[in-house]
Figure: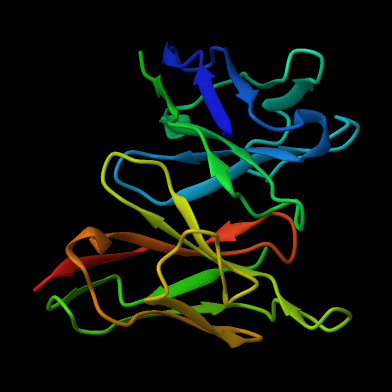
Length: 120
Length: 113
């Protein structure tokens, strides 16, 4: 059974940093692209980063480029999101997602999410 | 960036009746080399993460009831719930995976009338 378990969320100051982790199990982690998708309170879904199975390629939307860094440790089956220069608008539930075999940017499994709150 | 626009924003349907949600993309998500539409639909129930229902615009994910169906091509797509059940109350999102960044529609809230 595929499981994705996020951790690391919490309260951060504007301009501060936070590192999210996602422990994956139930599948061959290194074979799949992974992404982070966020959802602001009461709002819709926004993709915020993606990484290839090998970790050699990373992708970001303009809204977080230069501030967020996605990475993975395939030996530990863990995905990370390093967030810096945080803004109030980064407040959201952050979901770890797995890409299906047939596409990098669809999301066939989601974790339960971890809440990040950016406030002074 | 491909903009996804859903309509309506919300709808209320009687139990057993049909619910129809529309999704329009700002450019085609049809890839002619493999004749596939790079369009998916997700269901998000309150307090839960989204769940992939349909991919390639019309292929149901394993375990999804057959009352859910997807149709359309190019820029115009539809999710249909043929006979609404109480457990279908949720927000539904379309999403394109044709190009980076992958983008979602704003969501459509489905309620019981």
